[in-house]
Image (tube, rainbow, N blue to C red; front, side, top):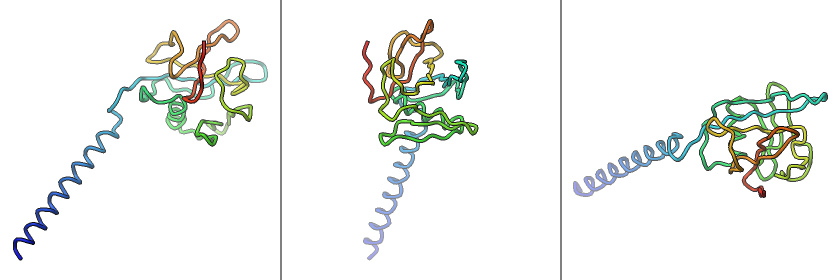
Amino acid sequence: MKAKRFISLFTAVLMVVGLAAMFISCNNSDSGDGGSKMIVSVEVYSVDKDGNEVIFLRANELKVNADCSVNDALIALIQERQGTYKALADGSVDSITFDGETLAQKNEGTVSSDENSKTFRFTHFVWTVNGTAPDKATSLTYKIKDGDKVVYKLVTEDQTVTG
């Protein structure tokens, strides 16, 4: 009888130690320190009726996983600034509400990386990665000409960037 109790007690101790090790391992992997990180600065602009750009939402130093999609980074920005958003069926951001104002996509179709796209027609997103504007398209940006200036538009993971 003592042997069975000892084996049961020993098994219970092993289970508790294993469970504790699993929790410690999971907590360390979720701490945000694992994986490659980058600092992103993003400004979400809207254009008023007079054609003037107005900053809608901004974060200067947002730490994100280097392999996250722009949609994920945009959601992180919205949450950082304590805004809310509505998503399309595929999870991509459809509208952002911040300080009682809502900025929404202006079309019913899918998001497009085409510079003539009507998606966020009165909106553009200007990104810097690790403090500088990227020289070429990355997983986060698509460089287009907007009049006489360069705009880095958001590119979501399911978009195709050409050029």
